[in-house]
Structures are given as C-alpha cells and as structure tokens.
Length: 416
Image (cartoon, rainbow, N blue to C red; front, side, top):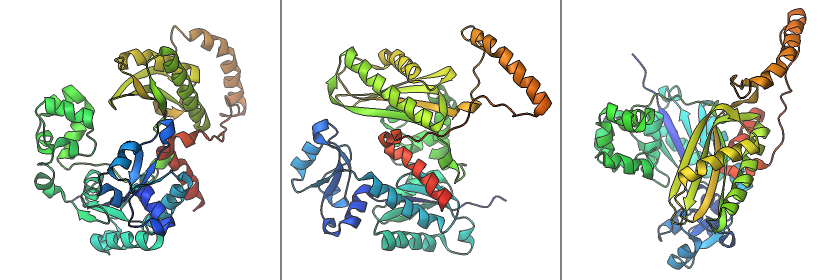
C-alpha cells in the first residue's frame, strides 16, 4: 500500500512589500507599493501591501492610476539585494526541518514533510514554521498542506495572509470543481479562453472532459491539466531542481510604443545579446526559441520554434527571433519584447546532427578526431578534451531576478 505524502507549499505574503515593512517598521499598517520607474515606462506596481490592496491596488496596475485611487500610497523602488537576503533566511528555516525543500521562486517553495509528520501533526508543524518565519524574520506567509504539490499550491492560495489550509484529494469535487477554470493554477487567460470555447467553464468541466479532445487541442498539457483538476499530481519534491536551468530569457518594457522595424530589430539585437551572454555564463545552449510581444493594449503574443541543432550565439538567436516575429505580430504598437531560449543543455552534451549544411565542417575536423582516438587508445579515455569547462562570471542575471535568484541560492546552499 502506497503511503500518502504530506506536502507543504510555503508562500510568502506580499513578499517585497513585507520585507520593506520589516526593515522599516514605520511603514507597517500603511499602503505601500513596490514599483518601477514611471519615467522609463516601467511604472507599474510589482507588488503591494495588504493595506494597499484593500484600497484597490493590484499588481501590474499603472502607477499613475494607482495614485489616483490611493493618493496616500507610498511608492518604493525595488531593493533586490534586500529581498535576496530575506529569501535565503526563509529557506534556511525551511531546511532546518528537512532537506526535501524545493524553491520555485524567491518567495515560495515546497517541502516534503512525510517523515516528520509521522511524529508531529502536520497542522502543528505548519503553525510552528509559520510562527518561526514571522517571529525571526518579521514576515508573514501562508502554508498549504496536501498530498501532492498541485493541491498544496492551490491550498496556500486559499487563505492570505498568514493562512494555513489543508486540502485533501477527496475534497477536490466540492472545493475546486465549482470554481471558474481560470482559477486553476496552471491555466492562464489564453488557455482559459480556449477551454471555454470547448464548453469547459469550470474546473469540474475540465476534470470530466474527454481526454482525447484535450489531447487533440492541447497535447500533453491538456491531459496533465485534466489529471490536476482531478487532484492527481505525482511530481516529487526535488531539492536538486535549483541546479537545473530550464530556460534563459530576457525582456524589456520599451520607453515608448514602437511599430518601426528599425526599432524592433534594435531591441531584438539587444535582447539576443543579453540572452547569449547569460547562456555563455552558464555554459548552456538551447533547442527552443520563444519570442514574446506585449502590445499597447496589454495583450500578450508568443511564438516558438524548436530547432534541429542548439543555439547560443547572439547572431543565431537574433536571426531566429526575427524569423518568428512576423508570425506573432499583428501590427499593433508594441510595449514589450522578450526572447527566451529553452530546452537547454550543457554545451558539452550538445552534438550537432550531421546534415547537408554542416558535413563540411565535420569533414575538416575528422582527422583531429582520428588523432584523439589513437591517443585515447594508447593513454586512456579522456586524455584529450575538446575545450575546457570554464564558468564565467556574469552580471547578466540581474535582468531576470525572479528566476536567477536561484543562482545565488545554489552557492548559499553549498556553503551552508
């Protein structure tokens, strides 16, 4: 008989704003918001305190609009080093209970407490963790308790701030199925729109949908969502996941809306250079490239392409991005552009497939491989290596803080 797991999802409440209030007690009880620079058109609310949310402030709201709604709103610029330190301190507390901790972003992570729960009731354990984070760091969090990651994540969203919620698989039909399908974790606006066009308006509709229909319209993702809607999720809590980079990307909000190809090409060159720099720093290359366009109406458009051979050079990234662009753009003025290379692997593992386009290059290198083969036969395998694995220090990660904080966390865990 399979033993039921006990999974926690720990989600920090209004993290950036809460960290600011912890550092500046005079801000407690006041409506505050972390926002970009309005002069650079990055003037949107990144996060806000619960006092600000009570007055109608929400994430992605324009700063100008926010100040009209709440003139007393206190605006603060983001202080990423401060948030990194708070995140490290939070994960240190979680790891004091178990090594089975999986960070998924700067302010949330999973814990597998199955073994601990044999000696301590999960609710009592969750209360202790929540109080420790609050008393030691002065930061609020919510904790979801469930038999798998999806339900734990869903549970932690049910009561904020400082909530602890238990969600059992048998409660899924009662608590989740009546909800609108867009309320389900993993279903975005675009996916919700497609589901509704197929008469799936609630999570229950998705849970009971024909699997063949979902596979036809959404592929494996559709089947996976149906399983999650039924409370099924077999993913393990992976403490090693932070060592795996799945994608490298960069995006920028433009100073003004653009429509001219000269401006678009210039922006894509800049983004491609940044992505290439970060790939080089991590010794990675990737098979899939995705571009993102956000227009002046805040509508997002994406287009992806999976390549036969991996790319990492800025010229290749730029070329592929520009080929995708006409397929994704409808001519509406552009507010934001982004480029991501995913399906990444270590460069050492990448082996180009011989094709009509690159056979000459391999033919030239063939004599070198023959020499290497002979030397390995004589002196042993690995005596000669093609290139040296050198990790380059890079500051490119500053442009993707929400993901690359994990790079800092790796070093911290190794030291800890």
